[in-house]
Image 1 (cartoon, one colour):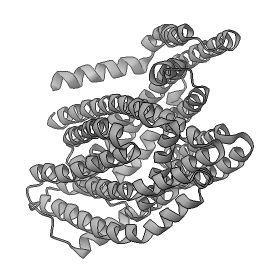
Image 2 (tube, rainbow, N blue to C red):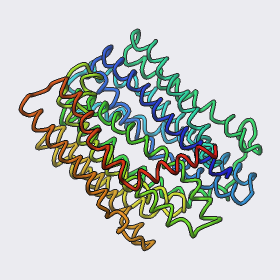
Image 3 (cartoon, rainbow, N blue to C red):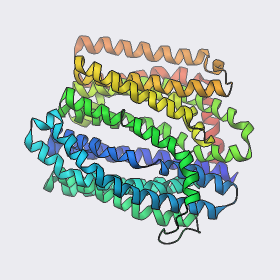
Image 4 (tube, rainbow, N blue to C red):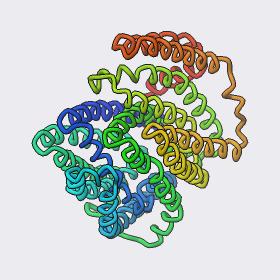
Length: 500
């Protein structure tokens, strides 16, 4: 019962973090857009892309700590769990310093050859000026991921969420002060301050749970690192191919669509990803629980997967149509105008990211079990297809073509992981075939088609933008209420909240 209670707290805390972070970035992005403009914001996006090459050196240690800490705590070996955290943190901190120093000239060269920056020397100078702060932020966040992973492994995601909310609010407050005075440089300083704050605060939080951790990490063990690397190499491969996904997409969008298109991609992707994260955050909290169940009750894992998939399919069929219908209203409220590029990008990205949610049960189950081969294969598939589709479609259709390629790669690569898990564990897909899901899907599609026809005939209208999500949401209420997954969610929440 204690475990169930903590899982409830973790789920609620993760969801609260997503809501708070989303609201903070809603304010931040609009504030930054008003003060520095879309093109300068696009420069910041490109700088972050370039600095993200540091992911080549993170060794997957932050993600691996979750699994090993959870595993050793389940076995009652808290000392070994503490050794894992110290060894991973010291290794990552030292290795990243060396590698980032070597990669910095490469990043400078990459910015100098970007077609949009090359054509605007002032923008290039600004990008080079904020690059060191972006590198520093990536180092601090990567090292902090180890102690944050320790919190996840100890099933205290509520503490990790509290720290990350605090960091986000500090980022917002600092940016509100610095951006009007220093422009993009002020935003870079705020980002670095957030990263350092998270690094300094996460270690004492980890020590509260793992009492064997010292005040300052100093114990490094080669046997422990060897054990972690055997698992984390899969995360490293995924990180390498992830560079062919979001970072490469931002590069393609800014190259084929311009700096403003890069800014609208950042806006659209942030909006969709935060809404998607409401589901993912709650689901991700089950990873350490799966690792524990693998040790103690492996027979129930199939039931956990089926329930997870059924619930997520219901949420996708319910929320995706409403999200698509609400995008024009978001544009009016967030950007203060109907921005066609933002709306187009957000709709396409919404389809891709929400369909990707269907792979989450398999992806997180593999993480908890500790078998990452098909997660790696799925990530490689996404990266390779995105590179091919993004370049080919971007050449002919500009930034929109890049986003279409991004979505196709995301959906196809995610299907690989889901299909592999269901085949490997002999899970039939019959449980997803029910008339309630078909009815929910049909209402959503018909409603979206109707509003598309009206919008095409009338043109952009603030009042249609208000009516679309409201009317569609009401239309979906009846089939959603009749859906068995809705009853399962309601009963589960009532039971868990009652125990809490």
